[in-house]
Amino acid sequence: MSFPQPKPEVPQLPQHLIRTIDCQQGAVRAVRFNADGNYLLSCGSDKSLKLWSASRGTLLKTYSGHGYEVLDADGSYDNSQLCSCSSDKTVILWDVATGQVTRKLRGHAGKVNCVQFNEEATVILSGSIDGTVRCWDTRSRKFDPIQILDEAQDGVSSLKVSEHELLTGSVDGRVRRYDLRMGQLHVDFINSPITCVCFSADAQCTLTSSLDSTVRLLDKSTGEMLGEYTGHKMKGYKLDCCLSSKDTHVLSCSEDGHVYCWDLVEGSLTLKLPVGKAVVQSLSFHPSETRLLTAMEGRVQVWGAEPEETEEDVVVVQQETV
Image 1 (tube, helix red, strand yellow):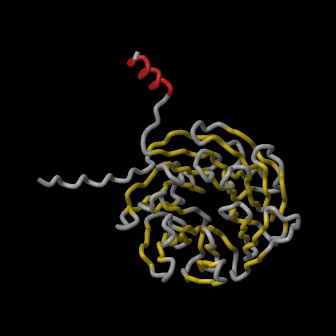
Image 2: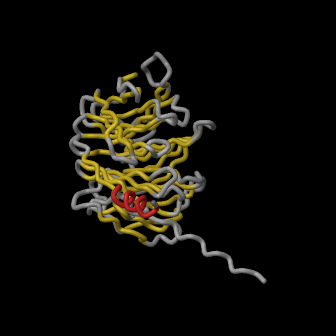
């Protein structure tokens, strides 16, 4: 006698608001989970970078050193260092524990839109409105970049690094993938300024959002378009897109106050998450759990698949078990 196969579990989506954090740092320009998802970083228009506990929503440290608003940040794999970039044209490497500036990296000719560590945190990559990506050695005593990639014809709006590959998106409408090991450059043309790029978790695909209010999923090796996701509004703001941690869903910020979430394979809209009345400026998906961060105006929202138990609920449960 054969038993029927159990139905595959429907992947859950982060549709319950767990908490809202009032960051008190002006407008939040970007919000990011750290490498293990236990902490979050918020980039403020008041020139500060803040580190928070993701589970409790408590402020752990404030990093001050930029001369203008902070636009992006990233944490190293071991949580010992942070990097951030700013409209002040600089990239800063921070010591997490002390809050001190380890290194201030100058060289970009305009505001720096995006920044990320490589996986070993030995190199910081930064992309700027000046059309270049600069690679900085975090351990060198020299303050010059070890490499400058200047293929973009307009500002670099977004970059992601994965092992030996670098993905960049530019206002010139091109997605560039650098194979740093082979010294090769692959270019895909999307006829609209690009706001955000990312790799899929399986590293087979790239996701791109652009100012024609479309998110596109491309096959990394062939450039073939595998999916198009529309319905949101992205006309004038540099907003984020991302994939869920298991590559089941595509998510995007929108200017209409929602986060749109599509089924990756079917392309259908699965969830339209109402964040608020303003532009959803930034988002970040947890590296392994069903959790989502969003940023709107001066606040960050933490979303989860289940409503979180409050302390009162926990007390009641404990009393019942006594």
